Amino acid sequence: MKMKILPIQLMLMLGSISYAQVGIGTLTPQRTLHVEGNAQVRDLKDKLADRTYTKVLVVNNEGDIDYSTIDQLLPPVVPGNDTKKAVNNYYAKPGKQPIDSNTVGCGKFEFAYITNGTLGNVRFRLKQAPTENVEVYTTFEQNYSPNGFQFEADPSPRTLTPANEFIDLPASSTEARIVSGEYNELYISYPKDSEFYRVSFYVIEQDGLTRWITTCENF
Image (cartoon, one colour):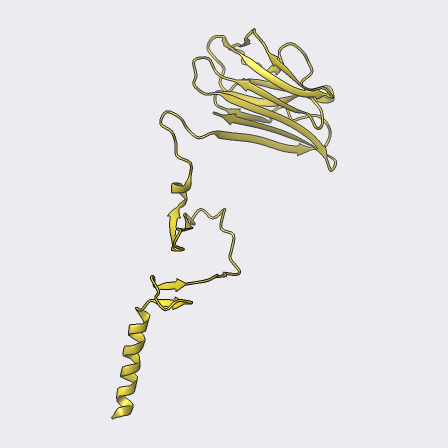
């Protein structure tokens, strides 16, 4: 008779333990699992690129571990403003001439390199041809000599016509023929538009290829 009662008692004991609080290094656990001391987890997988993982672990001053969603950890958006956006175009090819048709779009503009002899010129135009002339002002900084950056804030606007042809930069010289290791920045905005853009141009020769990089940041 006693042998039959024992399994039933064990089952009742195990059931009660499964709902108890467990303490490691403490006799008074405050949570289902309470660890006083260091903990180590090994063989974790990197899930940064996995969009199904939407939560991250957070710890308070008491050592309690919970979670927060990734969206809640992003910087707050101030009313009337937006977070900075960036688009880029990168390609590598043999030789020192860019691909004229390879452009990067940013807002109403598109930017690219255009072949000029054995070098590349910086250029821009509108994504869609305007129905009438559009005048935009540009500020350009270029690192083309040992003296460092040359700054150009042209007081005259650049005119984009319905023909929508590319316009070379800068306005008053031909120094923006990009060579390896050269970095240039363009600042531009569309008339009566609240968007402001900073466009970076960089060229580098490496491993037998020339790398052409254009990045447009929208503020």
